Length: 149
Image (cartoon, rainbow, N blue to C red; front, side):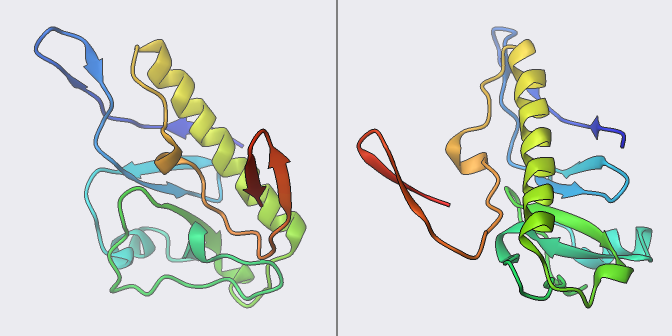
């Protein structure tokens, strides 16, 4: 699986790099990460990938069908989408598959963090974290906070 991340950053007046504007992230089946700086309709991505469908990572749950993003829907900035083969369009999502997708998304975010930090750009904030729903809640104590998976 190849990892390919294309990112944009801009220069401040003093010549230092700053974090780019929010992007839409699309993870392709072949391992490519595509970032879009402006919202586009899902139909544009789907027309370039006719044997695939798009899933919004925030709407994926264990033992549920994979939700298709409609072609006329605008892909939102600061969201992660998975481009999946049509052969999986009727399948329900297992815990193992969801974890695999979450790990893949996390690896890309980590890769981008390293790339940006090597350029002295602030890494992802909490708002930029992967939000792949697990379909269950299990409270765990972390310091003085509850962590919900």
